[in-house]
Length: 187
Length: 362
Image (cartoon, rainbow over all chains, first blue to last red; front, side, top):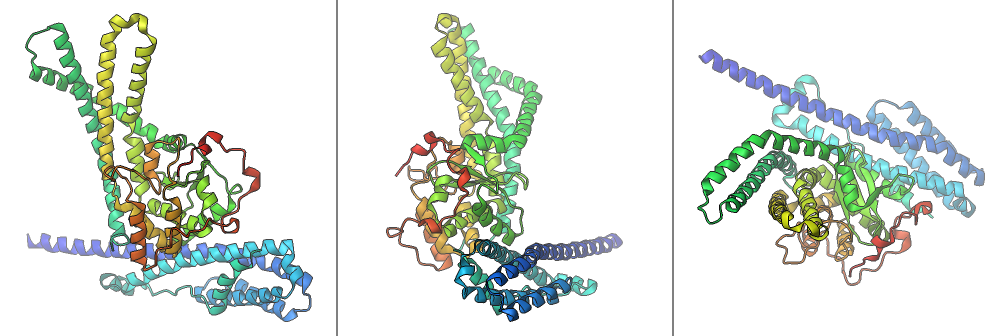
């Protein structure tokens, strides 16, 4: 009789552990999916950069330093695939470099009136808005996952199976300025 | 007023439970109505055969019950077939009821963009978009699963709201989808809507036989009488399903408003949107079923049968929850063209139905 009670309790505990484990896996998966949402937008920005640089170059060929910054930052993003932390840092640098590019563009009225440039700016502002939205979802998902890895019963599972706390997608100041800036450049 | 944002997952759970309950109760209701019809017809025919004789009410009731049990498989089959029809064509029915048409991304790129950004921030698939060509300002969401979720807005709404206000409206509808409110609504309106449908069919038949078949009037009087009884009972059944709609929580609008603000982080825009919609929400040519689904459904009559809380209360609730001052409704200027969403000019005029756009209420 008492053996069955013990077995029942053991089964209940195992069941609970399985549920907790699956919940952690699901939350981690949501976070990964969320990152791929951002990734889609970041790649679009990555692909937009050369066109943007070419267009600005057509009007302001001598601003070499700015182009160099952008190109270098873009190359870093291309190299940094995979690890989130490194990638985020590289994307932030690219955001900052783009901000510099736009600041240069401000000084050339002809460039600002250029149809192609306006189209690219609209695209960029759209992409930045989408990155912001996707980042919000990613950070929410990360917060939920992190909370789960710290809460009492699941913290045991997290420790056992190596569910570590994950990083948020933070903006540095230049990137934040770009998000603020981009929609404003619409004509 | 702290109600809205908390307990969201329990709200979703409740909605799902109510869906199942409604669907399960529906065959029972149909069976009961079948019994009532059988009982009344039985009563009528006994009286007709033996005028002046004592009527055995209990016996008739028993007979009606037997008949109902006998026909139970048929009733269940009919209900099942209706459910299958509803499952596959609810989107089409809603489209026909509301006179909306789907729009492609290329036709309304900015509207799509607003909605897409909201969806990205919630990590969900973008619903379909539809438009009703009318001056009224309203919007609703419909659908029962990820494939069929759609959001419908009126042309009047797009033409009179600023971008951030429209975003608030879209976020409100998106929250309804996330909260599973729309699924419950569709179950209420379409799945349990068979009686309304049949009642209308019966009424039109009666009208037809009363007005167009005068030459055979003597012997068709009894049929008309029977039809009348059937129609009355069907209307009663329709009323019963209307009562089922009280399953709908009236808090859902507050929750959707709060959810929208959580998404857009712009309570001021949401409040302005509600103010601009207020009093101009009635879409001519649509039915009550659609009006019930909309972001605002203004019902006079002290709000006894209201499906929505008064818009003033929603604005006050929003202002209290978010600590934002209420915008001054009297000095709310019309929205300048630059602040609205621009649209693709190629698709402007062709689809506007002049009959739908004329009715403009104060």
